[in-house]
Image (cartoon, rainbow, N blue to C red; front, side):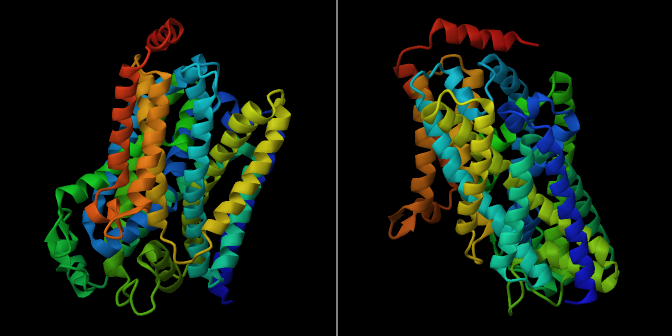
Length: 512
């Protein structure tokens, strides 16, 4: 291993040790399940905002999105536009109402528990269905983060992918297991800050070190359709984007209101004042980070020449940010420790999502399944022990799913995002804003949304193709509206909610 690689490795080791220390510190402050799952509802605005956004974006922000832009051009920007719109609406419209409603609905600690309490589901049907959906799709989501970590270590250090996968999974497991929600949120705050710094600095420096004109260099790189098409957001190579393609990318924004790992941040904020502060911080972070990720894909296309990622044995396009940092800080600027810190930003993006998903999955199994169905008299300390065991089991299963080094980060994230967004997004919105929503409607919405995505993405129904492949339409766009329609139709066709439920709805509506 060269001296430069050793210096970069030292930066990684320092960073990882800091994350583990944070987990150890908060382990001492975690005494019960409410502390482990929601941090005692004591998050301040800065931590809530950066934790929510860091856990949201994951390795997709620093690998998946720049890689798509690098490979296909700025037409991929519509995903970023959709996600930005979704972020704004989620913070402005959902966060405050959800926080108040989860407190009013028997101090619900998890999204499945909120559904159960909101609809007075005494048979715990919603709790069971919601927990199953979370575990299924979060396994895929967590696997995408672990796969991104494996690719990062492999690209930077030349370590075997499977060894790299094990290292990343072990560190994430360590601090999530120990510290729970507050450890995850504080590490996410650090990680969100590190991600943003790297995203902003690297493309600016790389742009000013280009050996020529950006447009001419992109033309030389052999981009499909030439530089004009590559830089045109309405062009996909040598043809215009279709309405379906743009709509499918914008539809990513629909997923936000159904992401349990983001929604739990809203539930955990200290008060309304801190929540409103979080809006501004989160939205500004989103504008800067998404914009910078797009610029990385564009500048990287020119800066990395004569290397063309994805061709002639070069790394995949999803490694564009890693390759830019490696070239910039180990060849041209010769400051490998700083390069190592920026590479830690990619690791931060990966870890900030994986830890949140492990925690939400653990809460669904221990609080919603174990406590509700297996041992109803379990105290908070026992639930805490079950939660930590669940974190270990889910991490191992996600590790197995991520074992294939050729798995696409973008593909895994896309499928999980669609499943969670379709199953939970519509019922979260309707439970907060439509008084007539009832228990049968909620069940119909969750089941129809989740099943639509599975059928659309995984079952070949058209000449050996899935409906997603045949139509080009993103499954979230279909699943979300199928779920929404089922909630409305079934709720109107069945008995109206009780007076107790509607009175609670009105009280939450009037809460300041």
